[in-house]
Length: 154
Image (cartoon, rainbow, N blue to C red; front, top):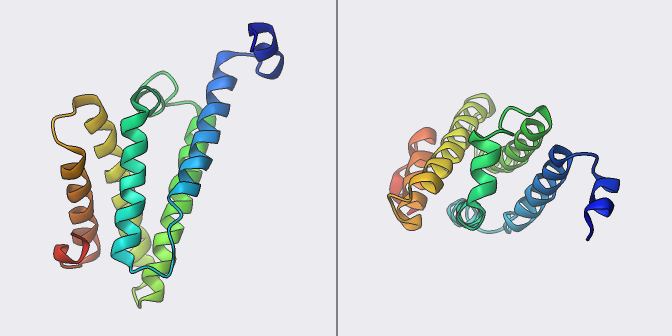
């Protein structure tokens, strides 16, 4: 694709990056949409592994939208908010269906999702632990945030 064609559809680099990130976010959500018939632990592990894999495969994008020049952009923040909202709502609905109280669950899930995102960005920047260790850490944090035995998610 020529530069002229590219700028015909996207007036500047920012709009191009926003479009790329939005598409990537939608693909990530589609891949992480696990079978709701599976036990929660399996759904959670599968979704988390997919999310971490995405960060590992796209480190530049992960750092740029979370800590770089685009991190304060309202359009980027709206995409991140939408993504976290969709994932959070899936988890909350599953947990409430299991008998958890909605208000407390919403707070715990939102906090856990913020933790996961921050941990993934730090992991991409440092690579000081393995992907497997990061997954286990995030699963343990989920168990702690919601009062589960951590063994349920490992």
